[in-house]
Image (spheres, rainbow, N blue to C red):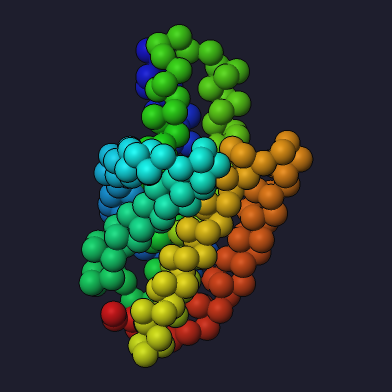
Length: 235
């Protein structure tokens, strides 16, 4: 009976953030499209796991000092892989879809895909607890993931989505803007994880908090700017 509860508490943080960010859209997307992208975001977690395991194996064979191995794995083997896979979901399933008609849609769908990805991560983490269901432990993990990793996924992918949206209008700078978006989201995602894993206690929490707050503020202004851009979009 514990596994249905794991699924519920794994998905719940993503659903709360999903409802929050969907309110940003004055022309709401269809529920079918939202659920579709959320589901594809969840599916993206599966190849992410395989790629992360393969990349870690390759990096391990380089015989690097542990700190350098951790750095490469966190920034490239995890952050870059996850941000790029979430981007692929939106590129393949949204950008040519008839419902994509506003610049703000890019940010929203990147966030939706990210929240689906985070939900799958949350479920897998809770499943690792085994069949013994301890409500306090599950609830604590769910709350920490809500304010931490789940929020981070949404913010990083939303940032990438902002630059992807700008590339629609700046066609000559499209590749540059995409690289900037992927680079910033990967850098901050990696720094967040690296801080928690490797830095001293005060910095292991201070740096992630600064990253989350800074990205949240950035996305608030990004949404306002995109709302001012013209509504018809085609890549």
